[in-house]
Image (tube, rainbow, N blue to C red):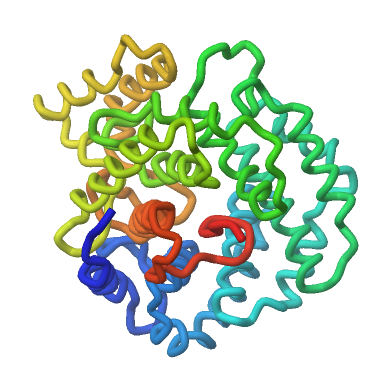
Length: 378
């Protein structure tokens, strides 16, 4: 795998700087308002591409904003997925900004960790792969690890219980789901990715990795994407790439894996927008004849793995309410083809992991040495 990394990162950097306003707030896209999540995405992306100059320049103002943002959101509901996601991202941002020990974050972590970890994981449906349970499970583990690493709390047994719970409830494919599912599904690795971030950090390796990779490759479409949504999504593609690049001792599927990763890497490079950023998908909107044919072809009725999910997404995406993307990061209707900081971060991270997979000596990327999005193993 080879491409001009300096030119690629220069184009990305130009896009990133346009998202930072005069008050040092960060906007989700060039047309949107500012967002506390966008600030976290920005810190991670600048770190990933090695723009330490901006990080050093804005270090103290951004630390202050990160603290204010987490305090402000805590006034709504600290038990919500939204708050826990922002807290996890803020922890890693402060680690990147070389200011990891923070009393505000510490106190929130202590409030959120459950008394009985098994009961909590059962309650959120981690054992059956309930949507969102992977996120919540990962957040709690991150809070444990943060308190252990930076404050010397004794939560090792809690983490062991966390691992054992997931090990015991793992399905045939190495993920978590309703036992009624006999075929492989996109939701397995999209939800289960989060637990594997923790497994990777803790060095837990008792799972069928090669089988997982084979099943994920089987879902790759002709463009290289790994999503039930045609044109891929930043999150779904990254989840798949995370597993495909996980521990590259893949003797039995080395050639197949190499082709798969090179296809998605080329695709990512091809869909970078002129402004240097990335969007969610090129094929969902507008609904014209070309895109409709692509969406119908994407259903791929012959491949039973993930077929029901592709059909569901096809029908759902035709509905007028899904003409735009709405999420909890900002009250803003994002176009499917609108460049934004989240998709840009995830696409670059996907490319960086593939680049590192093929050449461990590549020094063009900075990976986070803490569990969560951006960790690349020890």
